[in-house]
Length: 458
Image (tube, rainbow, N blue to C red; front, top):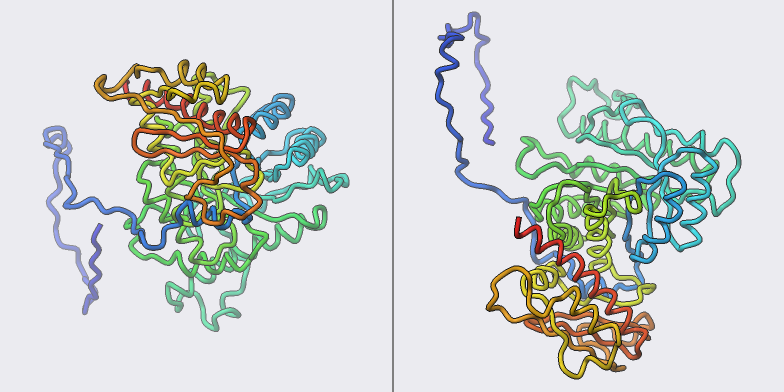
């Protein structure tokens, strides 16, 4: 979109006559698609991208692999165990029966997860409320790690004016610049969440705050871009704040761009939030989450996913989120590591070509032959038949992969590693247990590759 602003020297006294189209003529109008002169992509800087080796070098830095869980109270407890098995370390839950909610939060903490709590109420109605949950004292294990709500809007929409503009800027708002107005509304937004933080810490002294946001919006659409001062003011909340920017498309640069804008503004923790129901291939989840990692994200968290209550045909969606998070956001507690800069490439290659176990690897893990045959398929079901299957090589070795930037770190001790180059998938580890963990990682890639292949055929 292009804009032109002109100053009129004189105020028009009479409007110029306009020829209106008769209503009957509208039905006879020929409509044509407008073809843009160019399709602009969100601006990203390849030189600033965060690579997987960058995160491996910061293996001790906390990273999020999460899910906003949708489940009834009984199912939720079982789902937490399933999510823990898939490497999930953060769950967002909501308030139903306060005591059942406390049970979920305590269970998640026992499994080593952060537990975030969504408050009651809508952003249009004011602050989120946690009164029903904290009506009675909660033990530390039952206190949520962070408290928030969905801020489903851009900029200052629906932010109530809570400050005195004249006191802040020394002039009425009518005489203010656009940036001063942005700073005013950003200050009101910041104050809202500082108020929430102060309130919840009366019941959960270590609790933080969080919110979902679609800001910044799609690049090149806003005529006036004041995201920087707006975000910088909100980032003043500091370490207690977690921001969840969300985007549901497949313009992967947009995910990278959104995260980068928040990180550049100084937000301490930015976690990308993909949603179910919008993407059609597992590889799309992997690519958009990888893009967010390149933008500097502190993790990824799927929004509004059922696990145990999901239709079997939809399970691949939450599985894709957590596999992508595990591949892109490594932490020391993981049992196996995926050493791939672009994990979607492995998934797509398995979907197209299938896998076969190399001679000599059959004795390393008894389960390997069964898994590779049943999921990898010696001859792929889809794709060009002339393409040879990927070879799976299993190495029981104490030698660490050269891709590790800090080989002396204790995080790698006893762990397995998954690598993929060209036509070969390599599973390595010092013992059978570590190899089995790596095989589980490959098995999950293969399960989602089967979904990918079916999606490609339709």
